[in-house]
Length: 379
Image (cartoon, rainbow, N blue to C red; front, top):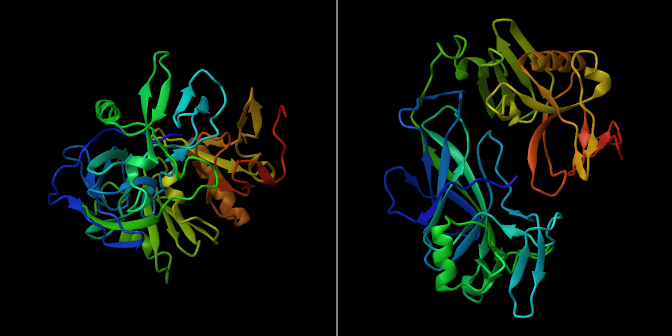
């Protein structure tokens, strides 16, 4: 899945709501972030804020950067920034690259979808798992595209449209920059990253502490607060406490893998094996549905478990879609069998990484089932 970029423009002057990195590792660049939320949205500690986004600006006048990952603490990061596209990419003798969009396979070249030229900004939709405290932690990983020796203008190929309406990626020109501005950004190629095995000219991770005015609201969260439920996991140094309205319960996960579900039905404690970010994937679509790999022998008698299969040329990894009632059944069975709920990252067909829950199933990075070893139907 390609990250949806809402806007691309020249960076605006920094204001009170624009934040510079609190810390950085690797090659430092001048990037800032700003959180965007619907007007009047209240932030409640423990309640996921939907409809929020992050504006990332490249304030460096000399360097271009390319996003690699962006995510909130206790959330699931957006990582689909360097991926192939549908089509056939042909490298021409003059150094340009023509893209035939009618081809049905993926390109061998990898395209940059989060490129920020000097002075540019982009807006990335990103739900915020609201934690306690006056600030929320955001991490942005990036690659450097161009440096003092190899300037970004010689590294980057921007698209133009030829007479056959095919995209041709070529040198950075005034016309190419104007087309990029009019189209609000879009994909590009970087010579240092477009082929598998190529390395960027530098990499780094910036950590931001973004001010968010959040408050407890026990009337919205089952009469309890995040602080109340976090105490259930005594001795935990890092706790993710998330209220899930579809379950009418809190999901509390510690960094050591312990977890609990707390609601009017009481407290269900789990032994371990949970991913800290697992609550972020519960009701991920906002319509009450949760996708998870489930062991057929463990859960087959309580829910209808999906299995891997092929749909034509595409691999379907076999994630079960769970409504709130079925999800509760799965969590209760996981408690009985002492199974953790893990976050796994898979890219089944090369279109990009998706994050799913997994309970009792081990899968490889392509979403193929390792344990239990189940071959896809139709293979």
